Image (cartoon, rainbow, N blue to C red; front, top):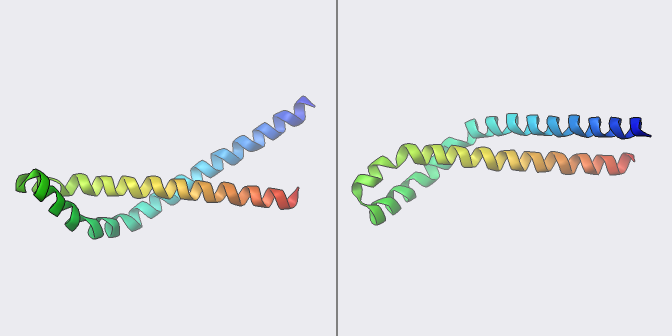
Length: 98
């Protein structure tokens, strides 16, 4: 009985590590592909906002931090989305099989 429980726990551990790895790899790919689009769509607005509320000098300094924040946002949203999608897909498959 303990052996079955240990095997099930090991299988869940492998599944969780695989989901984590696939989600990270997919997030890195999506970050590489999507960050320039997110940045291009938002930089004009963020520079105008910064210029209006913090001054012209601050607007000149915001481009690099905004690019980094855009990339981090794309990465974490992608990782969460892929992780949830794989988990839900695995649960749906498991419910059909078992």
